[in-house]
Picture 1 (cartoon, rainbow, N blue to C red):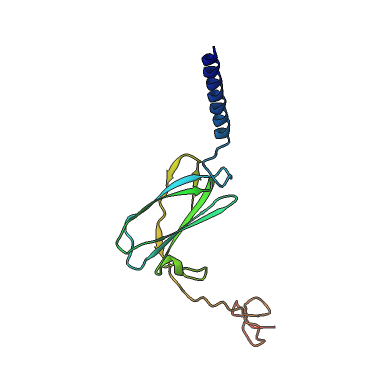
Picture 2 (cartoon, rainbow, N blue to C red):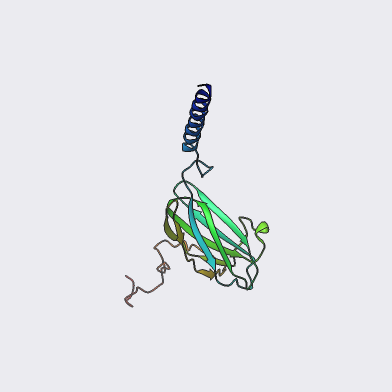
Amino acid sequence: MSSYRTLFRSARCSALLAALGIILCLGCDNNPSGKGEGGEILFNVASIPEDVTCVRVTASGDYREVVRDFDVSPGATLSEGLSGLPVGSVIFSASAYATDCASVTKSTVPTWISDQKTVNVVQGKSSSITLALYKNGRVKVTVEFADQEDGGTDARPDARPADGGTRD
């Protein structure tokens, strides 16, 4: 009789431990940030140009922005899965630099830039995106304001009217 009690206690104890384990795992979350965001995008670059050693990808969601830098070698290819991204409507853009990523600052001018592209990122589903990068041209623009009384017509008293007639 005592062996039945021991077996019953052992079975009951095992059942309680299993139930406790299930209850604890119900609270487990694979996303440590606790924000419920964890989309994934596959990012590919076919061939790195000669003047590029850093590629930066920016993903801007409604509530947060994720920036990822990749040190690259000219002529190489790049294929990376970007995870931990915002979910929902996310705006992606990319820029490339002629310096290593550790040296890139806010004032560093990229040699290549992309247009922005909006993608619907869904948690647990992988998506792909293609961003075309264009050479980033630079130009110095000067703007001047001409302060004329009548908006641009010649205001001299001896000037002829636009119809070629004489002044009264």
